[in-house]
Image (cartoon, rainbow, N blue to C red; front, side, top):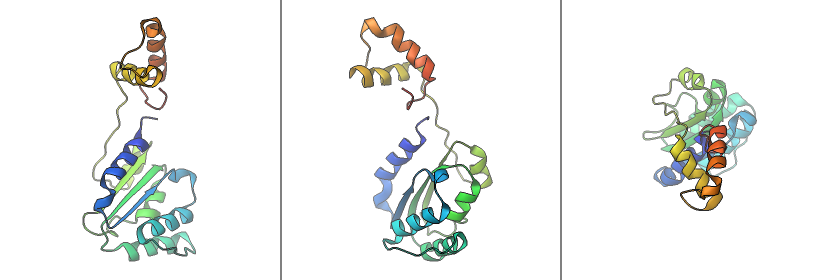
Length: 164
């Protein structure tokens, strides 16, 4: 992909210590909501909590996180329902809390009424060539015998860091 999860992980590592509670919910679209709610509750409260249903989990999140300053990263969301069941209406959390969402579908963010949207841009050709050179040759530039091949690879990958 374009590096959304990598950026979210970097943000988490830099800022997590500033929050009373923190959770990184990875690959949300692939997991059941009850399991994600249990993980969220455990990550923030540092204790196992029984979640009997999605509705009960949502109520627990609202009740137990009220007033807590939390950092929650919700990665790879593909349905606004997932956000509503995990983050409620965002007023469930205390002042200074931050919810960061990664998704391929901007409609999900708009339906959830997200304040700010950051769009990850693909790399330009020069940046992509340098990244590929660092990975392939441990240098910022490519040996001359591979220049043509390097440009073909970069063009094929379309500036996506993960593909490079």
